[in-house]
Every structure is written in structure tokens, then in C-alpha cells.
Length: 440
Image 1: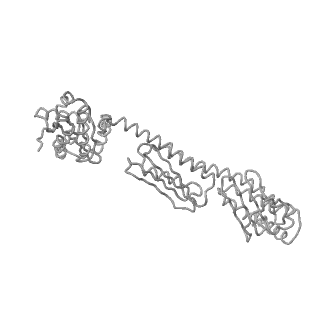
Image 2: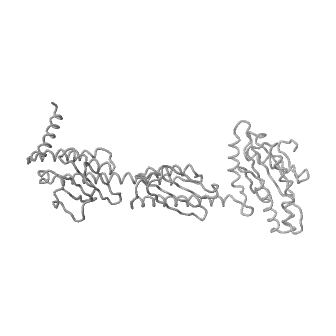
Image 3: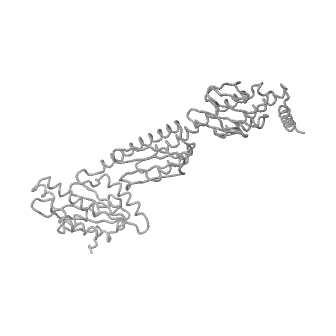
């Protein structure tokens, strides 16, 4: 028989002798030592609080002649934890009850937390040796470490959520919200999360949801600059405690702070890249849009067209009618160009009375019809800006990347500008192609 087998037999014999009523100091000491060793070994396993509580009562009922045991932890910042083994009645330690007032061996833990460890029908030798209190002290020491570990895990989980939030930038959308809700769903006792954002620049409402609804839900809402409304819902398996409410508040505060920063950057960028008179993009934004159009066209048979418009004889408009009328004409033409643009296309004020139009996916041939429509509509669109109903015409030049695939974006714009001046030399109120091909 091995040493372990001998020890197991000694343990079984000790349990039976104590059950039989034998009052032996050595047997009590042996059982106490065996039980305390097993309780201390629980810390080598990554138990959560509920698992640890159940393991405590299982060890006591397995290693001591006690068939019914119940433990209850009242922890600051955590939900009440209850575990039992045997047919123990579900009851809570009465207020004010102290050790020794009952033969059931009801004891109270003190220290980082408070709790009760109840053993019913405890044999007299174990009662005399204060066995339940010794077990409670050992369980309490382990509980302190479990609580510390759980607290660290929860802080790390919250930190992971906040780290994801802090990575948000001006490009955030549904994908980023889904990552955040997934991270929130990993928090203890959280069964799922939903984040809903209402923002015009993202097309209205976007939302991300992961996990499932639980028995309790906490909701937080905030608004940024009257342009962005956010709702955060977190679903819990059980009613959340104060610490969890605090964690949610910390997450929401981080989300609000980060989105406020991002939205401010978006607003500042928009203002820096927008022409204040017409509301179109300005020259600064055009550089980025040209790069994006060129990248998208870098495929077999890909292309994009650049169009430069110039209002004819515009200097005379300012000289004769004044700058207020001139501004009204610019605004009217900008409105025409904006309405003529499709999603993904860029209309911008290039400078003075010049405008630029970037048409992704267009060749010179497919751009001609679009440009012709703008040139034809210009006069009627701008007439209302003149006090005497005068007409305003426009000239344009078209250049397509398919015709100049090896030139820079700047050279392509220059080619469109050269075509524009050809249209002006040909009599204005018309357009010309940089390739030299006729308009038909």
C-alpha cells in the first residue's frame, strides 16, 4: 500500500471514529489539518467567487464528518455569494448571533469581507476544537486572495474596453462599436451589450449589439454638440452591484470624452476643408480626394475624370453689380454643381470663380455628358442672382486619368486647366477635352 493510500485510509478511519462519537485529540487534529490543507490548495485553481464558495463547502463535507454545510459571503462591491452542500436549510445568519450561541457551529468571518460558514450536526469533538471557526479562518484568508484576484481581473477587463474606446478616430463606425460591445460583454456577469449612435454624417442611426439580454439592464445616454446621441445598454445575468455601476460609468465617461474629441477633430477638419462662402470643399480637401480617386482607379480599365469650371467674365460681374451679387452668383453655381454630384463625387471651389469636379470611375467620354449638362444649366441657375436678370455662363475643361495614366495628380489638374482655357479661346460657354478629342 502506497503512502497516499495509507493516508486516505487513516482519513476515512478518523472520519468514522469521530462520527461514532470518539473524542480523540489526535483524530481531531488530523482531520483539521487535512481539511485546512485542502482549503489552502483551493488557491492553486483559478476559481471565481462562486466556484470558490462551492469548493469550500465541498471540502468541509468531504474531509470532515459534517454532511451539511453552507457558506455565504457578503462582499463590498460584489453580489452576495451563497453555496451549500447537503440538505442545509437556506437561511442567513441572524443579526447579532456570535460563535458559540448555537451547536450548529455558525461562525462569522471578519477582515476584508464578512460572511457566514454554517456546519450543521457538527460532532462534539469538532465543536470543542472550534473546527468550523478554524475552517472559516482558512476560507477567509483564501477569500481575501480570491477577491483581490477578481478585482484585478475586473479592472483589467474594464481597461481593455477603455483601450478600445481610446483608439477611436474620425473613421469610427459600426465595426468599432462592435469591438467595444464585445469587450463589454466579457465583463463579469455581463451577458450582452448594445451601443446605438444617432449621427447625421453616418447616415442616421448605427448600432452594434453582442451577447444576450439578461435579467437586469443598465442604460446610459449622452449627447455631444447636439449632433451625436449615444445610448449604451449593458445586460447582466444578475442585478448589478454598485461597483459594476461604477465600471459602466467609467466606460461611458471614456466613450463620451473620446467621441467629443473625435467629433471636435471632425468639425475642425470640416471647417478647415470647407469654403465658407459656398459650403463646398476647398482646395485643401481636393488633394485628399484626388489621391482617393487615383487609388480607386488603379485597377485594369480604371479611371477618374477631373473637370475645371470657370465662370465667364466674372470680374465684370463684381465690377458692375458689386461683390454681393458676385457672391450670390458663386453660391448659385456651387449649388448647381453640388446637386449635379453623385455619391462619392467631389465638388469644390478651386479658387476665385474656379471650381473643380472629381468624378471617380469616369473616362473623358463618360464625363462629357455630365459636364455638358452643368454648362447648359448654368445660365438659368444663376439668373436669379442678378437684379436685372442677366445671364452667367461657364466654361470647362476635362481631363481623364485613362488618357494620362503616368502623370501626377497635379499634372492631371493642369491638363484640365489647359483644356478650360482652350474652351475660353473657342468662345466660352462650352467645354473642351484635354485629350484633344471632340466633344461628341
